[in-house]
Length: 152
Image (tube, rainbow, N blue to C red; front, side):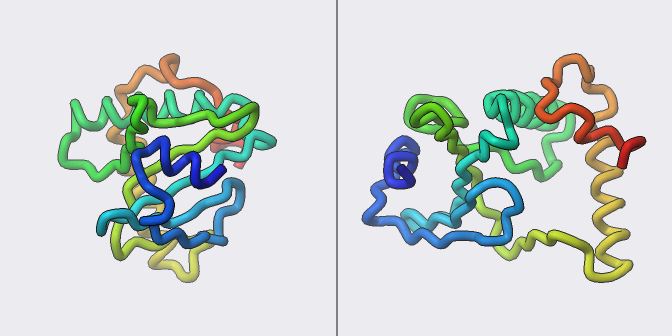
């Protein structure tokens, strides 16, 4: 199925260097190198995300908003498949999305020190400030109360 996903994004699996990224807590994730460009390919866990399309709809809404209002802000937008869609479905629960890989980037499951916690909070604050004028009713609820900070 991984090979079929790559073909949907115009990539010949035999010409790809594919490396699993094992720190994903929810989705299956791979780094894919194709024609000297690096990508992240994710298989969305539909046991957690009952409506995977909502994820894609929200990301595209945020991406378009930020491009229009804050074009200099680095927001990683999904890669379009050959069909023009940014999320593909290869069966009942086989949803995939692809994103550009940000070179020299790291993902942390938890902060290792106060400086990392400070930077994470600072960037989260910046992100939410930039989106403060986005009408919330345009976003779809992916997981109820997941972003409810009062509960966290």
